[in-house]
Image (tube, rainbow, N blue to C red; front, top):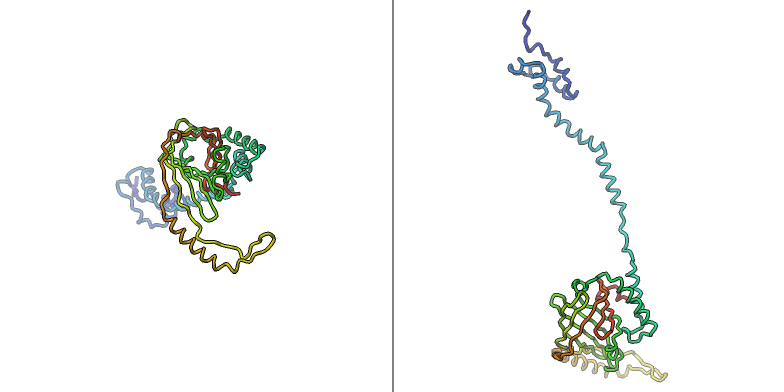
Length: 330
């Protein structure tokens, strides 16, 4: 039998019929025959071995050429559609306003019932009964079961809005200081140092001043603290350094023109300013509280971020609002 060259047994046409993707077959078929060099060791092997060899060279080109096409296919297969759908879903999410709860309504009703009561001094028996009922309902829904374990909520300055404690009524009625009125009663709690500061600020015709007591407190139960007063402070009066008078006043049905006395009033105003600077430079007066009765306890029956209800050892109830709360806005 005539011998046939091993290379001639595998012409270029045979290689082009290898079942490879058409794109890669085209790439191979455009190469000249002498550019596809088959080593002698491989040429003696079976046709299947040569098929594996010829396939091994372009396979890397196939992946490189197909990367972009696969990427496009992924987008076409709905990946971008899913991302777009999620974006639309996120765009449709609406921020809903805070839901008004039953506690919110009770707190608003309670604060509204304080109107015209002068912190409880002028409250009628009917108004007091309404306030007691609202307080009882709030205490039943207390969101802070153990107030003394939530000292961060107790922290800060609390403004007295209402009380049934009769011991404060003489101050509120101006019986003790006829020319002064109580401008604010507050309690400031410092949970880190376990201190309580009670303060009453008075306002007079030409000055303001305050009386403060400093105390330490100890936690005795989840709702009760024991308070021991240590010292009292009478603040330095802050005298008004300006006097503003109207152009005229009405007295017994007659209008009196004050223009002629404006020069005298200017002199009085300058004197008042000088006195104010002198008095304001003086330190406040401090005095110790050392008697055995300077102790009390306080039971907190309701507590949240802006409202506190407490009961004292004398049977009085105190409703306090956190400084800066919207409940203080009329």
